[in-house]
Amino acid sequence: MQIARVETTRSRRQLGRSSTLRALIAVVVVVLAVGSGIGAYTFGTLIRDGQATLPLETLYLVAIGGPLALLVGFVQQTSSLMERLSTDHLLTTVSARTVVLGVVMAVSRRTAFRIAPTAVSVAVGFAAGTGSPATALTILVAVAGLFALTALVGVCLSVAIDLVTTRSPRFRRYKSVFVVIGFFLVLVGWSAVDVGLVTSGVLERLASVMPPAWFVDLGLVGSPAGQVGWLRGLGALALVVTGLPVLTGVTTVLATRVWETEPVSAAVLHRSRSLVGDGLAERLLAGHVSRPVLTVARKRWLQERRVPQALLLVGYLPLIVLFVLFPALVAGGALLAPILFAFLFATGTGFAFGMSPIPTEYSSLQMTLTTITGEQFVRGTILAGVAIGTPITTLAPLLLATRAGAPVGSLDIVVLGLVGAVLSVCSVTVAVAIGMRVSYRELVPAPVPFTNTSMYAEIGRAGFVRMGYLLGLLGLVCLPAVFGYLPVVFEPGSTMIGVPSVVVRVGSLGLTTVLAVGVSMVTYRRAVRCFDQYTLS
Image 1: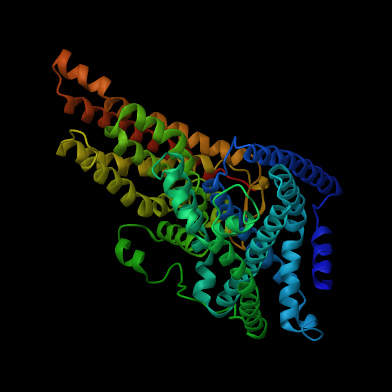
Image 2 (image 1 turned 120 degrees about the horizontal axis):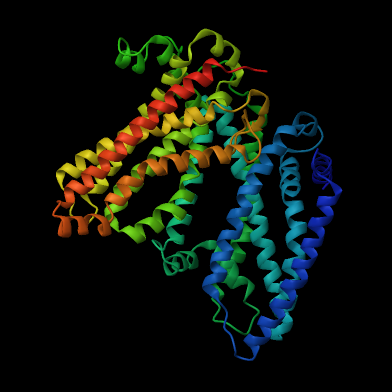
């Protein structure tokens, strides 16, 4: 209790923990508790009168989604707390198990205080509405048990990650990549549900068989209203009784290993090479690309290998999928899929490698500005993005064109692949020209999400405005191809004018290619000029 109290006080005294914000949170918690209690009482009354039934499937989803959201927060809070915890001092006075339990209470205490009023209000209100006082007790036991297990699992996961990071330089380097991949999977899953690829019935069936759903049955054991599984409720109770001591023991063992193991030295270089030495890029491109250009590209790839900042920028693509691609596919049919996905992947390439040339060079910007020319820097940045993004932007339209479910000839397929490659180059070039307009004095240290690394970046809406510029300009370049592949455009041209539909489609792709080349040339010269005229004042 003392460890938890001290760490909670330290967190509260951190910069930015204002008393006004705490008061506002307290008001929100009280209002939410009162409203939830009234709603639970009303719903319980309807169930008692036979006018409503328990939505068990929805409750199962809440029992899984809620703890997952809490679990992410507990892992992050534990990692932050363990960094400032004075373990050398604590372990001379108390056991490792006591420290672990203190950490669990510290990371869960604030969340518990915010959840408890609503949980108690709902339990009491529902029990009063159904006329079953025992329901209040069973709901509170279920909520408390699930919350305790979630908090202990979160601390255990965080300690396990710290142990692997301490022992393995490889995992320490790629830990952020795993987190980003998980973030992408969550976005993809949410998008699949949002557009109906995964129906709610499938989710409900999956949720009903998972262990967190058992706590719904445990909470409703005392309710006379629903068809409750006694065995599942007892299983949840057994999970709490056995899981808490087992997780405590496992976490204590892992934490002891972390505190007693010397971390891998930061000087250990794992598969790190000189930017101007031999490598795959040197063997493939030497003689075709100048050394300064290749060095700029290799430096950008090395930055991404260590801290995948580009992957985080690409995380905005699911929003484009939801609000641009899916409506366009619904309006234009499957024939538009290759063009739209070429636009999507080209945009992602521009976001990843072109939008932040100044922030990624911030630490060595003085040297970069005085040792290479604008053409060398811009070409190196474009090479870094094109080498990664062009294969995807080229192959994706080709694969989709063969499976679009529409009459697409071989000529269309070949030209679509060419358009994807050109759009990739155009996107990176436009992004570099836009990104070079960032002022050196506007960059401030900012944490990279999902990592323990800070990088220089713009704060505020300026970065999003620049991303909007790239989206708008690349969208204008793609408009001829989009219109050319709409059936309302090429079908009348084929029937009324006598122009074959393939000519209309390929012609629209050719026009998009010409526009992309023209825009690339203009923005390339602008990016070079911006670099040559860039100042730090």
